[in-house]
Length: 357
Image 1: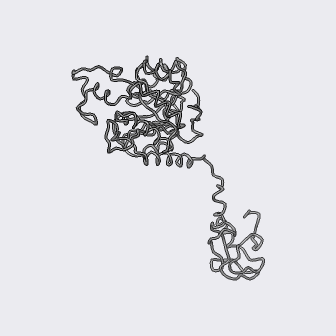
Image 2: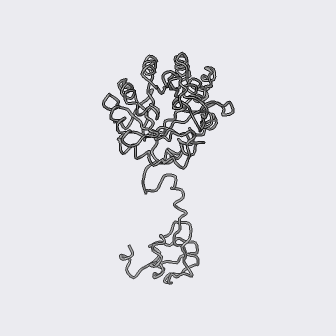
Image 3: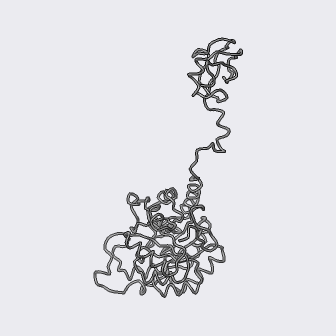
């Protein structure tokens, strides 16, 4: 698998700041006008891409009163699966206008397909990448169909165990996927922070030899920003114009100012990582002179012994380093030394200077 991938000319990898995806999902609230406004707002916030979801209630489930198809508890308590997806769907006829608008204003847009008909539609729109949702990650025929497009695949791993992730990755590879990102995900809405287990992010990358990131359903931006330190090169976060407008996904979605903050903070977090190293940093050069060193705190005559009454370890740092303190205290002045002069080797003599050096 490639350690650097490109989506719509944007490079993604550990050498680049995290790729931020604003997930619109159901936050259009049934209005294409709101969907347009959301895409514009996400671009203004600084995201790299907007993602939608491509399904209908009929491609997701069936309209059935059997208990299996009813949601009990949680954010969507009282809905049937069919009615939830009917309310939340992004109509197929919206897709081309939304893709055209995103292109017009210069923001990448792609989608999560939930069946083969969705893939076919997205291929007609020349989608630049595909996202596989956690709930569909084990739908290996769908994974195979998407992989055969040759487009980059972003795969959420919520609820999946190691064996299931391995199967999905293998199917994707066998069917032509060369560019893959695995997103660590907790499929709970909203997700509890204490179960985030962000250390899974680097482990995914190590185990499967792919780029990794985070699909974040926690409240706020702290978990997403923290993930950057664990190597997340992609972060997906649900987005809404306003949580007060309500909607199926609004409760765990970011508003525009929060999304803007996420974009800024993750970039700063990435910049702060740098590389491991112990040399003086450029920003420290002007500070080095303020380290401690050995100075005369009284006038010292030539031939006089140096002691704790006439020398001291103080700032600034133009004298001998404090590591020579014991040697300095056993030395004599070879010149007159004024109060405030830095002590240096050419001002003092030792019994055996070579041993000191």
